Image (cartoon, rainbow, N blue to C red; front, top):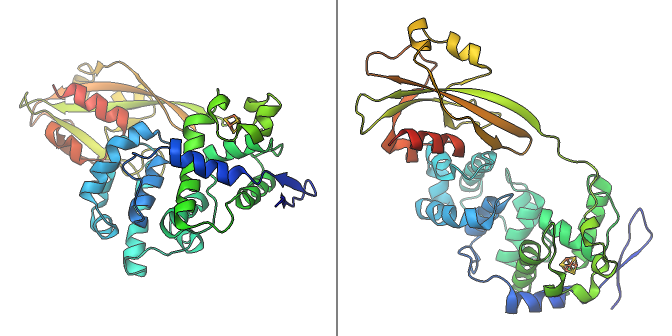
Amino acid sequence: MKRTVELAEASEVALPPSFAPLLIEWQRHSGRSGLPWQHTRDPYLVWLSEVMLQQTQVSSVLSYYPRFRARCPDVQALASASSDEVMALWSGLGYYSRARNLHRCAQVVVNEHGGVFPRTAEGLQALPGIGASTAAAIAAFCYGERISILDGNVRRVLSRLLAFEGDLAQQGPQRALWSMAQALLPEAPSLDDMTAYTQGLMDLGATVCVRSKPLCERCPVQSICRACASGQTTRFPIKTRRLVRRFENWWLLLVRDATDAAQPRFWLARRPPTGIWAGLYCPPVYADELSLTAALPAAMQARLEPLEPVAHSLTHRELRLHPLLLSVKAGQEPSLPPGQWVGASALADHGLPAPVRLLLQSMST
Ligand code: SF4
């Protein structure tokens, strides 16, 4: 049967009807099948893995997922964990608003839904922090809902498959591509079909139709791919608005109490609830070196020891961290911004940004 989708920009776009069968067949024989978050219909576990995988490599999630799952095996356990525990479990995975939303959402599921996730993408999307694509993934994997995911990887695959000329920086073309994604779904799929199809979209984007050099010769839909046929694979997806990154310098006052050399302690302050590293523990931050030194008595300023600067990339910022180490003995601490001493052995129990954790660990030995 010929499939089409109507668009505002073009009266009708023909869609390849063989896409879904080819993808399902390929996923069953050649797709990924050994990831620890696969083969479950538990919406909590699917949700947890989907959130962890957002903008994060599978290789990073592989070590975090089992640890998080062991500590919080279900939505009740997550809802009742402290925010410090959740941030510590997430520490180093980045994009910390995901962890805060995850925690908040678990509490809403427990307090307002009796601990049971809604069974439709629409209901799931009404929960805090669950976007359209994550809701679709949970509904498709767990309940077999006929709905398409459309994260960044899938947008790339479909825009190449269809040689989609719309600018994905604009909402109109984004909606149009979503309509096409829906129209490409398998006809009357079983639960297993929806699992294989959804997983197939993910696998294709992650392992074959990759960003800079797609492996078209290994692609199950090469025969129907319009970008490949025209030799223009990397022209898609079209996105005119590029991310603008700001550069920022942060000066960190790294106060170490080495009274017990084998078990040093660090003075850490909680970051504000919004902004970069919100809610995580970090040495006091200053906008420049002058403000940092001015916060200390003159006798201590001379003892500051500059450490190697650390570069750290965030989505919209390039941070350059300048740690200045001040070693003190118990009873000699200067007056410090509000915070707490954290011993080297307790660092793992605190939510710390990845570069700060590395820095403190290197100071602990
Ligand atoms: Fe992507 Fe190439 Fe497959 Fe087209 S043929 S979907 S460009 S990997």
